Image (cartoon, rainbow, N blue to C red; front, side, top):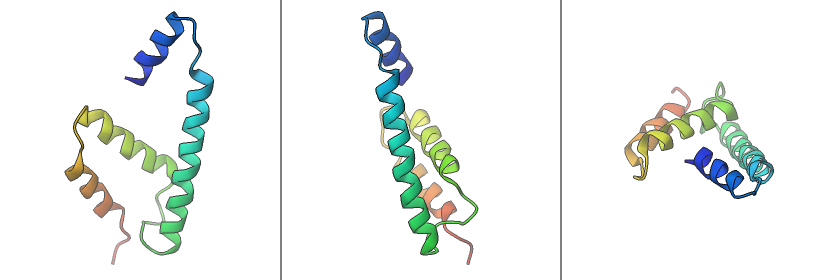
Length: 84
């Protein structure tokens, strides 16, 4: 969907790659901060990095399409908890 938007905007003479790249970087930085905080409180597994988290979330939302993948998000959240 994002690629279609970028292609269509490009055909209309607009370049969205810069703003999208900046937004992606800001989201990655914010998720990294949240992840490190959760790991410091032993709420997330220590062996997960921000790229792992983004990959998991991207895959879920891509597969879910237009619906909210609540069950899949719950499963991933539970799997990201540290072992007891």
